[in-house]
Length: 390
Ligand code: EPS
Image 1 (cartoon, rainbow, N blue to C red):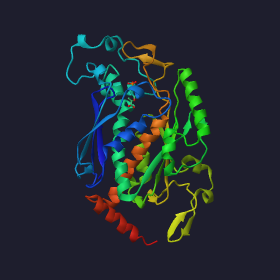
Image 2 (spheres, rainbow, N blue to C red):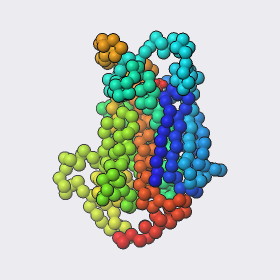
Image 3 (spheres, rainbow, N blue to C red):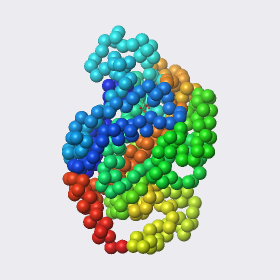
């Protein structure tokens, strides 16, 4: 069983995570996790914090000499913002007079439409949005990317699975439908918006610059591809083990994601049945699909083709041109909280979505082939592949 928990606030001391279920014998170079964290900070359209903050990672348990030992793995990512927030976010009580001028002069009582601010205050009975926005912050995704990095190492070493993402829409600008191969990942990462098509990339950047100038924000779509998936991950007999259902859950759990598609998704609803299915043919000793409408799952089970999923992010709800809201301390109409923010985080969404796909695949891979060690898990997979009846 592969599972994890994250803790920590956006301006707290650190984010931490515990991940359980990683078999013994997986090589876990901490520099790979650091490189993944750095990829999450890429992308034109992010705010000032992305430039001055570094994700300083420590592995606290579960890994010895760069190799997993089979026990829970514990990770820590300190926030370099912490010294400025030591009083506001102190875990020990602080004297009111010690709180900074800023936090006393600026109570967070004007919830942003579309953010967790208002429902969070209502749900937990807070009279200020600080405790809500600290945990609802997308800063938490740094911990998920670190865990996703561990999942990627596991998938790669057990089954040779490789995962990439690319941005296919920002605002109203769509990329063409060209699919990258895994080898294209480094060139995608060097593009300012992580778009595979350099022509569209410039249009996307122009769209972000225009939104920034207008004091506005933008959403978009990132697509994730996973290569070399074994046949048989997921389930058609259990609703809660269907691979596509788990992927949708995992991707929808990312901040601001409002839509998920598997394969051609909503586009399939327009087609005739005879056009929408992927016909089967024999390629030497393998049964393959001629097209890829279904995105690599059929009946909630991986079919050995490329997995293709998309996550759609709404525009960020912290908007410089603040929207109408109500000040909950007075009941009067007001303009929403506005603070330093990103214009567009879709390039980062791709990296976070890769992590959530890796985590989901790790869970399903271990469910089918799991052993206590890398060697045992590999043997299980190999035996399944060797005994496939067709
Ligand atoms: C975030 C707002 C910004 C982002 C932050 C997520 O932070 P701040 O309010 O401190 O400027 O920079 O993202 C990260 C810190 C990160 O590492 O991704 C939010 O409100 O969700």
